Amino acid sequence: MTSTVDVTVLADLLRRAARAEILPRFRRLGQDDVRAKSEATDLVTEADEQAERMIKAEAAQLWPSALFLGEESVAADPDLLRSLEHADLAIVVDPVDGTFNFAAGIPAFGVMASVISAGETVAGIIYDPMGDDWVMAEKGGGAWLRRPDGGAERLSVAAPVELEHMVGMASTGYLPKEKRAEVLGNLAKVRFLTNYRCAAHEYRTFAGGHVHYLMYNKLMPWDHLAGTLISQEAGAYAARFDGSPYLPHHLDGGLLITPDKASWEVLRREVFTV
Image 1 (cartoon, helix red, strand yellow):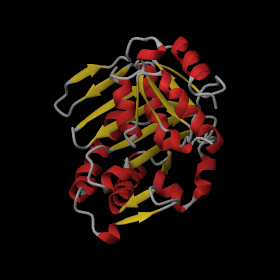
Image 2: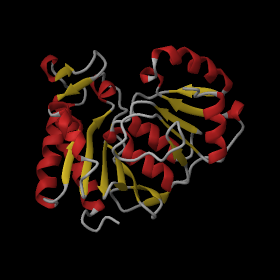
Image 3: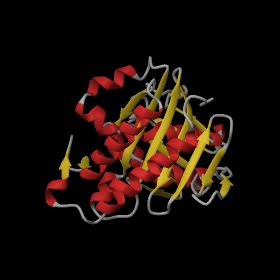
Image 4: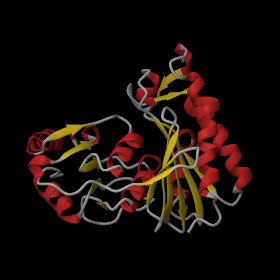
């Protein structure tokens, strides 16, 4: 599926960018190295920008025919988002997912990339700089935890449980204001709700079988394409709130991911009533 992009090479590039541009800045950011974008909690740091610059430059040499779509590139030129739907081949990158955590010195952040071919996500990579390993998937090939020494473990989502026993993660901050209180009240029906403020680690936790649901409302491609494919390859059921498949060009419509379709239907009906 990804013959024009060697996913192992792309995974190594993410790791090298993290070691060169991200980790040396962790807990060492100066006052001028952190800036707000759309709001006070939407941050960008020198690590984000420099890591994306490195990944973009090397990706252009390795895969010159691929559209490169990075979070910080789109922040500088929002019109880039429109080109994703029609690209024959694209590489979508989040240089530091969990920038709020990174800037606060919290070791929960990641580097993510996905490969899009003819409008379909065909590969996803989530690299954890602190743990120095990847969660990866290629379409049809399963989801895997891979380590630099060559070790690998196949991932599988949790077994389904009843609603009252479900543990999961929901990003409620981007729900419509009039619906947020309703959904938060509905979440009393599940066992636990949490949120890492880092989709990279939320997807890794879900694909590893540790929680039963993920919910997002704001759908930027660098945040969710890699993790959704990895989750599906680990056995998950994923759909937008209207039941339609989540595609690379979708920016809204919500996203709910669960171990199976029955769990999805229960959560959609009982909890995520948006």
